[in-house]
Amino acid sequence: MDDLDKIKKEKERWEQEMQKKSRDRKDKFVTTSSEPVAPLYTPDDMEGTDYLKDIGFPGEYPYTRGVHYNMYRGRLWTMRQFAGFGTPRDTNKRFHYLLKHGETGLSTAFDLPTLMGYDSDHPRSHGEVGVCGVAVDTLKDMEIIFDGIPLDKVSTSMTINSPASILLAFYIVVGEKQGVPSKQLRGTIQNDILKEYIAQKEYIFPPEPSMRIITDTMAFCKDEVPLWNTISISGYHIREAGSTAAQELAFTLADGFTYVEYGIKAGMNVDEFAPRLSFFFNSHLDFFEEIAKFRAARRIWARHMKEKYGAKDPRSWLLRFHTQTAGCSLTAQQPENNIVRTAYEALAGVLGGTQSLHTNSMDETLALPSEKAVKIALRTQQIIANEIGVANTIDPLAGSYFVESLTNKMEQQAEDYFRRIESLGGVIPAIEKGFFQKEIADAAFRYQEEIDKKERIIVGVNEYVEEDEKIDIPILKIDPEVEKEQVQNLKKVKETRDNEKVKSCLQKLRNAAREGDNLMPRFIDCARQYASLGEMIQVLREEFGEYREVSIF
Image 1 (cartoon, rainbow, N blue to C red):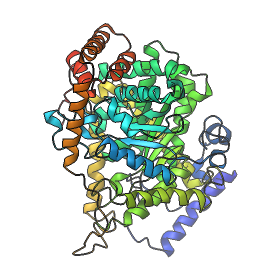
Image 2 (cartoon, rainbow, N blue to C red; image 1 turned 180 degrees about the vertical axis):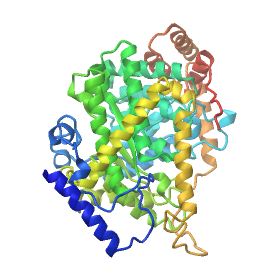
Image 3 (cartoon, rainbow, N blue to C red; image 1 turned 30 degrees about the horizontal axis):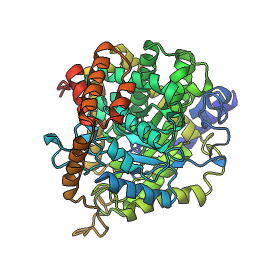
Image 4 (cartoon, rainbow, N blue to C red; image 1 turned 30 degrees about the vertical axis):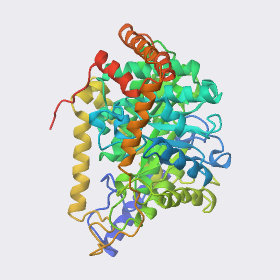
């Protein structure tokens, strides 16, 4: 009998003793994803794990323990608070406020009309201008947003998808006006259209032309904007839609592999573009499950990129990711409790090895963050970084029987999903068949049912409720005058620009869309002439059509 058999036998004995001598406080213990949790984990739960092959060392394949050799001992994660509201001037003021208080990267939130490709003066924009993010119609707005912020000194993330390439074009031209060449610009556009079809639903064009725009951006940036992350492949919105941790992991990586396949199909060498793919994950409330998810993600990506797609550059094997704490875990009741929830979620992101982090503000179920709330959220990161010692050593939970077991299980669940998606013909056919949507809907229903039955306790919501509670925190309100001001500013731009040049560059954009030429140079030309985002998107709507999701429920 070897040591593992002895441990198994002793564990069985201990479990029998435990059942005789103690009683659990509830019938079952599960993770946030409703996965069962055993009372104790021992070496037999890691059976078959090969340390060097499966876990290894930080900075080395398969990167389970982190993508850098010394991780946070060398450099802390980027503290990047998602910000944007009202007019471009309002957002510029908030950016300066955050940088003044120690933020190290910018993250831009756009309003709904911008996300959907409509200018502020479009009838469909009425009532939404500047409400959930900043309104951007033309290059002029981007010039104001980044006024006084040298683009060669910051990295900027932009959370936008269908029109992402146009926003990048605006940013490149702002850089030109500041004297910063595009090859020095650092940052990320989300540009992840596949998860829009799966979860967030802010798509405009059908999948194939959308994928063409993305591969055009990848091809352009590998030569002209080499420090820019061209896609932030996002699990965040998949999780916010109600998925489990394993679904978030599997669906996000499946999307990532699809972008790789389209890049190769477009004629690029995988090592030319894969190093600039980055990821964006949710950090939910189940502390150990989230850490295991991040560790599994790195290992899966590295293995597939090396062994399936033949990437030879180690930078192509690295899964670098941004983390945002879970907005869906925040509650409108007793909103101050959200500070505590966010702190634990942020800690899981750090122990999971994130490269950048957004911590949600306590008031985000009620409004966009106030200055007070966003400062507390930023201070939460700074306390984790500087006061509690977790940045001093690398992947400190490695070797935990529980965490390693969860990491292995998460990898197996993801691989099972990859096989199911492949059997449906790949990610896009699976989207069209509603596969992802049904899986997420089932998980969301199960989670809510557990809350309704009080099998899952949410403090302040279904337990520890305060009757006649009064919300006593400042709430940011968007002035209705914002829309009038933004529409007036757009009118001035259209009156003062050279409209013949705008007409000419929009026609060249149309020609490129028809003839298959790379669209990025045409977007940049249009930006330089102050053509609006809505005008460029309208050209593409006429050429590519609009996507309508098939009803599956």
